[in-house]
Length: 308
Image (cartoon, rainbow, N blue to C red; front, side, top):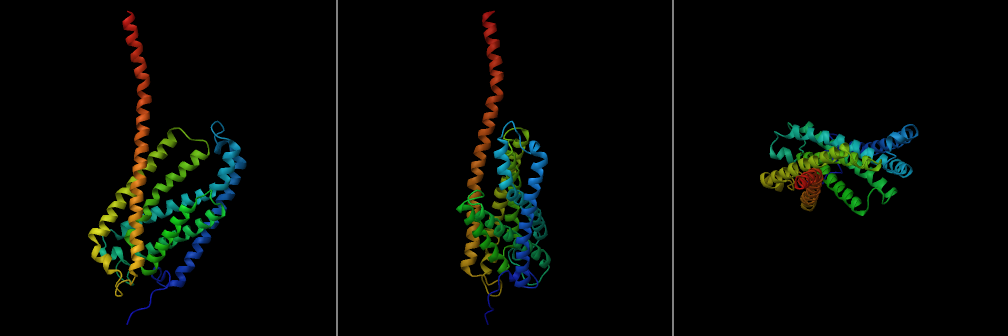
């Protein structure tokens, strides 16, 4: 007898679908509460420390203040989200590192890794809640926080996360995917520096370096290793997921999830190449600027020797 398909997020909680959906709704409201707190805190900060927050020498104070007050709360929530899920992603990778390939790819109803699996499912629900919360604000402030491409990205990854949480698949893969949010931490920090008029200096250079380094570490190196592990060393387990005796996930849904992971990998390689080119151009400019004074001094010495 074929078992009925699971309810939404049924394999994400010991109590089944209803408690998992309650967690989802609670998390959406939690992100919104954090947004409201951030909005209030930014307003209070500008009332007391406006000249410290915005660099008056390099930015239009009124324009910078308006931008930071309007869009800043969303970037604060994004910063907190990326920081938190990155930490949890590292925890998931550590807890499932020694697991078998099947335990890395499937959340079973019981087993030695049940607790670790449910922790992954908890982070997945938190991530979906953030995507839903963020889509609401993107639509409300459209297109200042993102356009149609951002909405498509959020909807696609929310759909994949719902599939994985419903059928209980890809727990280890979720770990190395969500750790990629580490680069978002520095991207949000960079946004604040630029919008507040700090578009040059050692701090911005360090943040740019940390962004590039974290991007290559998590979204290129770790992502590539994860893809190799999934499609080369775990192919038999991957094929077995659609079996009714395992997760019973439809091949179409599994194909969408796997296709999105491959697409994300290719996009990261493309973005990584663009970042690498920018870094290379930046180093070239620094080298040229640093050698110009030396060359000028050398030219002066040569002219003096000729006169003598």
